[in-house]
Amino acid sequence: MGNYLRTLLLVTLLGIAAGAFAQPTPPNENANPEGTNDPIGGGAPIGSGLELMLLLGGAYIGKKWYSTTKEKTTKTK
Image (tube, rainbow, N blue to C red; front, side, top):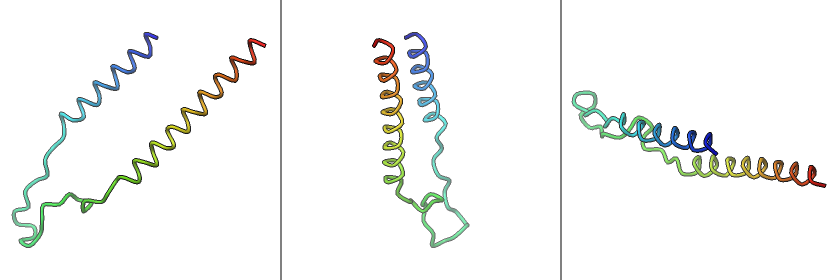
């Protein structure tokens, strides 16, 4: 349990630190007078990629949980 809390604390602190280093986009002064201040990716949506990542992560956790409970039930019988 202590290792789990230590890992959770580490992940939380790294997430907070990543937000602290976020930089705003630089101003578009002379590059293109008609251009906009859009990000480099053109504002591409990341929603479907995030959903796919969460789905695969949930499937992996479910498989691990199923394997662990299956091992526990076979050891007790």
